Image 1 (cartoon, rainbow, N blue to C red):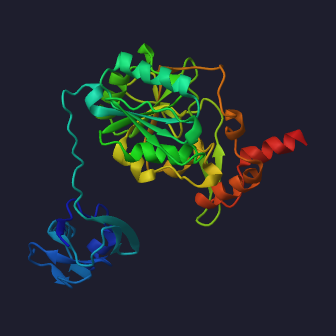
Image 2: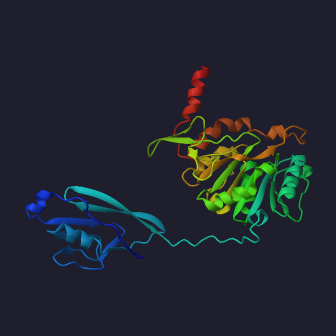
Image 3: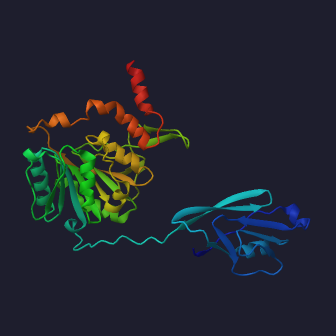
Length: 374
């Protein structure tokens, strides 16, 4: 519902024949969600439609035409919180489209930086289930390297096996039993109020090579929303290729190296589409995507977050930052039974995944692999 001056609007090519023949030059501009107003009028130039959705400018002089084009303003008259008005420009036999972004004024997200240290800017989010010995190691690793950092634990362990880790810097949230991975992530993320959060599984440990301070500064200094780290020497970035049209899509996972390019000014950090389930991310940007708690994704659904984030989150992967993965050891309560999706969900899971992301055919790579096996 405001006006904007259309700076830089001009014609850069004219027909020599029309000029020599003294043919009047006609320039027309049409809008759908606004009107055009002249903020200055040039002599020897005819203008019709001032204050309307279509304005026409006529003159014999190319220089006067371009001079008049310097004094056109667009005023939005049809409210929408976030949309584009595709303005159509016509000159002689040529047509061009000029997008004008109509958007409500966005208020900035403000956070208290405190001392500026990791503990004041980052919340660690952990999802746990039964593996309390490993959860203890994960919490201790955060407290050792980044003391005072708040840790949010989401836990769907059944009541008879539950053990609380609540402390001065640990908020341990109990969930209904067996609700799963993404439901826990959503719960944990909902309790974060710092600018960034660091997500990792309960069987991982922060080490000196995690370099949380560096990851924070990277997001501060760039327009990226999320940066992933590796597990020991494994980074495993992923890129996707979206094939199809407006009604049918396929998502293909591209082969190695799994990234698009190294980010200028940050050697060893690459831009890509998905990372492992250890990453530092902008809290509000990640909340805008969220984690789907549907039962089909309850026990394994990491890639679905990044499919939902395509085109929404700018994702990077850091090759020299890593955590430690703690393997082995007994886990009570028949953990392995709940580690994988139930058999009755396996066939449905792929169809649900396709439905959620408007994909009407299975992954091409999966089809190729199946053909090779046959």
